[in-house]
Length: 182
Image (tube, rainbow, N blue to C red; front, side, top):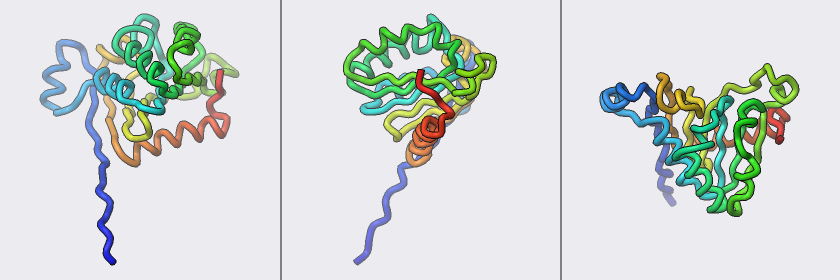
């Protein structure tokens, strides 16, 4: 009895942020995607679980306003469980209670434990977004105006087992006490 090998659905795509006047030529020449579009897609397509990790969030942009905010609210309305990992300072600029009142989704907010103990220490500089363990952005962009549309930022959109590993890494950080729910 022969078995057919499982088809490998892994993939990786280059993702960039650049100043507005350069994003078109860079994205075209490098055959890559834009950070804001990839993050929007991941949040908008998550069906059960979404993890967003960025040490720097900014009021008025990123998940607090604009397209990512709309996508995140829609995910919560769909019942998606959302994990947000950031610093205490970044949380001070977000209206977390309003996110928690949306839909049936669960919002778990965490900070690196070292940041909880000493706000001067980030505790985590990791920036990633994982949708359902199937697709993940891993890169350098913070969820700030410049991180999403101004600085030169580089990342990858991965699909397949590596995305699941990123999700498992985040859960392990919670289990080991590296991330603390706030």
